[in-house]
Amino acid sequence: MITIVGTGHVFRIQEQVSFIVRNSWPQAVLVELDPQRLESIRTPIDPGKAKAPWFYKMMAQQQTRLAEEFGGTVGGDMLAAVEAAERVGAQLVLISDEEESYVDDMRKHFPSMMKALIDDRNEGMAEKVRKASERFQDMVVVVGDAHVEGLVELLDGIEVKKIRLKDILDPQRMEAIRRELCQREVGT
Image 1 (cartoon, rainbow, N blue to C red):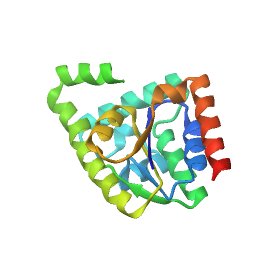
Image 2 (image 1 turned 90 degrees about the vertical axis):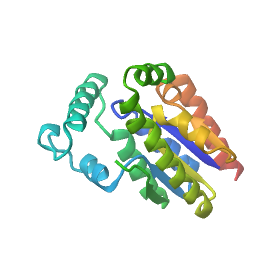
Image 3 (image 1 turned 90 degrees about the horizontal axis):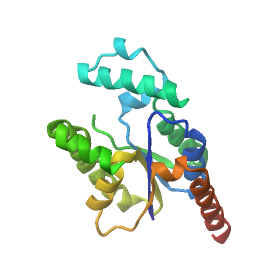
């Protein structure tokens, strides 16, 4: 079973992401990070001082502002998944190489950027998820919510459960997810 968890890198959802990973008891946790991005969220630096293309610096500064507004920390969702994987003894797999209407709007106005930020990355991540599914029966894949539908489409033929950002942010939906995961744990 592959569970794809769509997150928002600026929201305060660390506890929810950690709960989902811990209570799914996965053999592997795949996260939308590469080694450099993992290190940068473990040891944050000022985005303006980072060695990165200007576009990534601009996005990092914007994410920092949004995280402050939403009470989160940039990448807190991913770090929670990594730490939860370590706690349950799951294999950590990094799958990054460097709301649908929002994505569609961005795709209309910035098609080249969306191809680089979403589509190309989805293809690379889907390939890594497929390869990991040959080694691990139960996996949790934690990615930004904008990647969820594209990954599901690219993983055609593989059983996938989706948990979207809107589900994590809604207290009632998150409680239903908690109950389902706890029942699955008791049932096994």
